[in-house]
Amino acid sequence: MKTVGVLGTGTMGAGIIQVLAQSGYNVVLRARRQTSVDRGIATVEKNLDKLIKKEKITEADKADIMARVHGSTDITIIKDADLVIEAATENMEAKKALFQELDELCKPEAIIATNTSALSITEIAAATNRPDKIIGMHFFNPVPAMKLVEIVKGLTTSDETRETILALTEKLGKTPVDVAEAPGFVVNRILIPMINEGIGILADGVADAKGIDTAMQLGANHPMGPLALGDLVGLDVCLAIMETLYNEFGDTKYRPHPLLRKMVRANKLGRKTGEGFYDYSK
Ligand code: 3HC
Image (cartoon, rainbow, N blue to C red):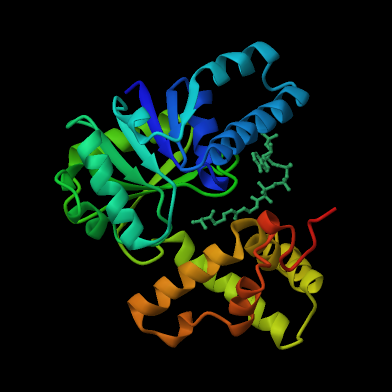
């Protein structure tokens, strides 16, 4: 496997591009708008600059890494990729349409993975003519720092596809964990309801945001508290995952808190919009 296509240059897409290019893969990335292509490449460059400052890589390493990254708004840029990782949209209908397009464009032997955080791999696979080569590769934010990748086998994913992706994940310096297809897989089924609960505690006035986060950092040894983590993940993403858990299980324990809905309606999505439970505008 030499060339990997990445669709999407948001928080996750840019992290995935960086990790692949740093591990020696050629990366062809595609976003719908040129500004998104430029933003994705700029994010990778900014992160590499931080590594230069920390003396973990040199300017020459950065030049080598960036020479392996090519971006376009034209989806045909991915047509020769051995693997495509989709990190573009969390909407099932949009994903199915995109996977149909990828299926037509990609080499027959290419594997197409999705970074979906909660949607059904089996349903996405069924929209293509290569259901054995569709798999979930669920990375965590911030991608360069987080060691885990959940490897999600749909009902039709072949063992060969799974083994290829497990080996690739290890080459990226990550630890793969096999998970069966299920809403939220392992991490998000535990983590996102915890964030939702933190929001409920805030709404009840039990403690303020800083107090809740400090309590969980010092009382549970979490690297960051649930509200700061919600801001990092994106409150729109948290809401979408809660909706999936709630709809799929039909259990009220997964009901999104009304304050989470309100935050999303107000476009207070966390770091990416400059404000969530904390202010990031400065
Ligand atoms: N991009 C790249 N690397 C980053 C980074 C970023 N945005 N933020 C931190 N890092 C790296 C640093 O470079 C550093 O690497 P080094 O040890 O090799 O130098 C390392 O992470 C630690 O960073 P810092 O010392 O600056 O900061 P902290 O020690 O405070 O750690 C953190 C920051 C890694 C974000 C830590 O607070 C953490 O682990 N938080 C929890 C994150 C988490 O739970 N993520 C999962 C979210 S759920 C998800 O993503 C699933 C999705 O489907 C919703």
